[in-house]
Image 1 (cartoon, rainbow, N blue to C red):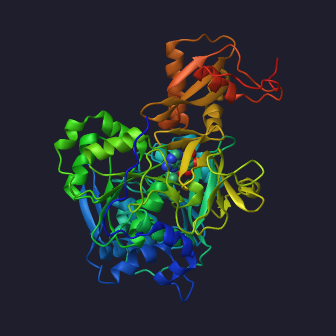
Image 2 (image 1 turned 30 degrees about the horizontal axis):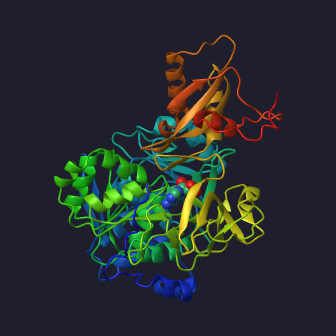
Length: 572
Ligand code: PRX
């Protein structure tokens, strides 16, 4: 459905003239805004927390935290003290040193953020893990990065295979009645008694910050390493895209296990000294609207699946809450349907601003800005300082309205710096040493707006989460009944895509509803609930190339009743 363009909003926005700014902007101008401009020695935790604690923002609330059991708030000064305590605790009870990898695998809570920023103060590289991950997913990530420590809870501990991870020397446990041993450290026992003074480890711009594992269409998940310098772009996009200013109460709904939850959950808002809301627990439409009302949220960053679920909960519900504080609403992670944008205008009387970026890009790339007309269905225009283009498979730029590879000119501040342990994978992202190729296909219209078309590869986006078919297929193959498995994303009106598996069974197994459930449980337990196929279809045999690769393209064509295309490489 075509939805009319929505004109720019009148107001005092931080990016008030997109065209003029885009024409004149240079990232190095932003370095002046940081405390390290002269020395070049920096630390994300200092810029995000201590700098404000040492200023007249000292008693400003940095964090509002709420879940079923807790409702707490911490000022920047309190955050400084708690993160210092956390840093002292981590240092005293481990042999961790600058550059070592520490993972965080726990539900959202204030302690998660104390420990995350405490680890950053020590100069560690933090690897956030989504709390739904199961043993297989945890093992792959800790093993690949030779992680020395993990922070987790007693509930999640059984999923951490520490006996199989020789580098993992310390497990920090956040919970009650913890029995310590030579590996396990009770966080609560030391957190409040540790000193609230800590000497921050000063780092270079290119030193590591976070390591986010993400999925591609082949191979195991890959570790995307970001550098401290990413803060330059996270800070500036907090202003231009999130439009954060001193009075805002900001809420980003993403989990810290994903890049949105770090870059825009805490880094970007705190770099700009903005009050941030973190809501623990599960999604519920009532709970979410109530959070906006209770905290007086002004800037709200969420995702299409969540908006579609809210839409499904009905407009009457919206009227039961006072959402009048909302000023600016944004979305990320999957295509934002024009219908959702129109619904946003109806119920919130607000434009929903789509933003496009990826784990690998570290910060916003293509966005809609308050001072710009929104064309519903378009991701918007490149952030000033970013050059985006549509290129063909040789890296040649294509004219407007032609579909091709969405590419970004190499060298923006928050660009990933490494794929951990895998330099050739890293290189494979770049074309002609000029373009970073995203793996998305898109086109640009005559006015410079970008329009998302789909993934070029087989990566699945389900409820805004990126799932690699290879990881799911590998887990399926570990099930005794499964001989062959091919996994695709199947379009779904709420979740964007759902995971569908085609499975050929081993001798002696018969298709049944019970077997479907058993296989689903198997993937849930081995990998993660969100990676388990919602649908399983049994086939005698799967389409394969002569070299034995499952042809997902053919599976997808079967599923969607489309022509199967060139089958010349398929085995007989
Ligand atoms: O396919 C694009 C989709 O999400 C992919 C990146 O996933 P991930 O690294 O998990 O990061 C998600 C949040 C930063 C992209 O390659 N994607 C992201 N934003 C959009 C999108 N697809 C359409 N529209 C968007 N705004």
